Amino acid sequence: MNEILLREQIKGFLNEDLGTGDLSANLIFDKETKGRGGFVAKTGGIVCGLFLIKTVYEVYGDYDVTVKLNAKDGDRVKKGDVIAESEGSVITLLSCERIILNLMQRLSGIATVSRTLVDNLDDPSIKVVDTRKTIPGLRMLDKYAVTCGGAFNHRMGLYDGVMLKDNHTAFAGGITGAVKKARAGLGHTVKIEVETESAEQVKEAVSAGADIIMFDNRTPEEIKELVKLVPDGIITEASGGITPDTIGSFKGCGVNIISTGYMTHTVKPMDISFNTIGGNKL
Image 1 (cartoon, rainbow, N blue to C red):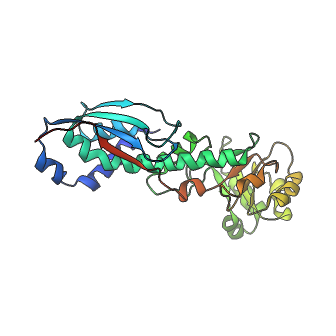
Image 2 (image 1 turned 30 degrees about the horizontal axis):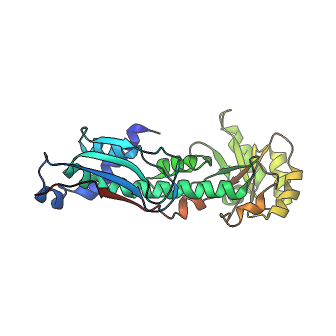
């Protein structure tokens, strides 16, 4: 996790929401008014983003809020669990509440569906990985949530891995030319992945020297035949429209990796609320 980037992002989130300040909280309370509240899971799932609670308070400018975590990222929680507690300035607690909840709810939703995908596949020989189908600005956090659910990360962006998709090879006049051109300018530590849709393309990718071959939008039955064309030492990946309902059919299909954007672009946030514990009489 890039802490510098994270704090800059949270600063932007707070600026968007607060503007010149929390009008409601500042009109009712003074800075010395203290309070306590708990973050409560209203549904069960895999919790993620608890580390953000303290960070948001600090970026807001309040280092005096006490945070008690009753769970850790990646834990399965049930409805009604108080997953964390905060105590400090009421203004701080109220001003930061929505940013914290928005982030934790989204990340917990991603972690929960990631765990569901891994469990439904039920094949430890295949890694379930994410894609770049994330909300702009939230990729670092989205991909962190994926790992909390027990899945893995694909490349972070366009800069840390070569993936030659259908448009790349079409513009380049074929897989062979695209791989040759990419290899000529590439450092030795970066792999080249090629997207394929047929046996002919798989054979061409193998001949061209691809490090990873993706079978795009192929059925498990088709993949079982295509993997036979790939020599040992070349990583194989299945991708395209894979969901929690369909991933189980890929069990034992022979690939090393299954990639799916479902966990980050089809997110049902986990329902979490922030409730006061006790109160103050004005």
